[in-house]
Image 1: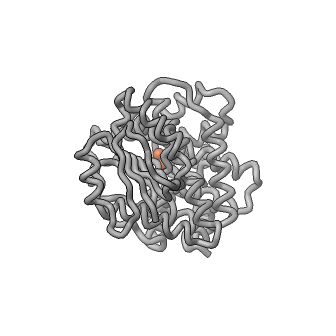
Image 2 (image 1 turned 135 degrees about the horizontal axis):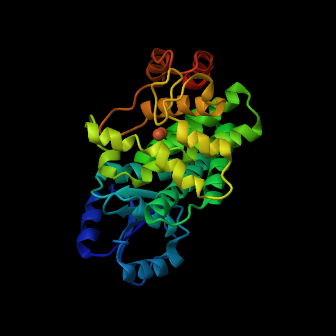
Image 3 (image 1 turned 90 degrees about the vertical axis):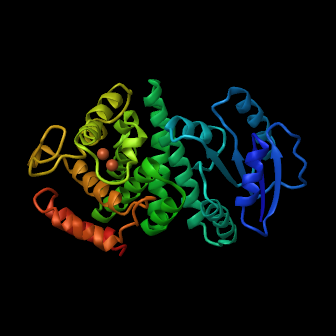
Length: 349
Ligand SMILES: [Fe+2]
Ligand SMILES: [Fe+2]
């Protein structure tokens, strides 16, 4: 397998030379250097500070030649949604945050080999849908952070694509792919979307409602765009102030989306109400019983389950059966017949 590395300093090139797995056909270039390789590489690794305007221009020129590489891994400094969005806009298919370990990098590159060798389309399709989905989520978060309009159409297209992938190739394939390639908020939103689609299918809801559910799932945590990543990604317990800050996200997400034209009222409601519980113990409005619509009830169950089975750096990912047990323990908060129906989703039957 061939890999080409572009970096904006010799130090970075040397570090990456050491981090790359042995026995790769690797070539290296400094940003702006002429590229002298006979064939398009399988993978491209970009370690360029894209906060520097001049560097973006130089990188764009290099991407004209190398952008056709199937696997384009961008290593970025700082954990900001804006930078991730920028990396995807420049052509990344994966975004990793520095400092990157040899294991992480090897994992992404080896996946590429598996992907190339895979005769089935399931893994390839899920990888592409996850990448398009992550890119849409990154753009949406950076738009909210920067006070610019949310590109609703891009999020809806990505949601449809994910729904098709899950319907065609199953939820397990989706969960494995997303957990392998994406982290944090992107991983969470992608997992919730896949789980919600599978749940909707299991229940036999209409195609229109599956579509609404998938769009609602993509948007559901948009209010987290204004919460610092240090709080969102904090390992361990949140303090009272941090918890209060997190609990503002359904309302602030609703406020942002309300200003985006063409968002269905059901989707708006789902964004605002996805942390409400049937017994009135949820937030932000303490709604109970019948005032929580069906679509929201499906999304809430999918959201909790997806959060439990997430693959996070600081906690091992919980097996699906254990996550389902936790849903069962939430009696009174979630609709019991829906939780029973969710068994099929949880156990992948
Ligand atoms: Fe949420
Ligand atoms: Fe969520």
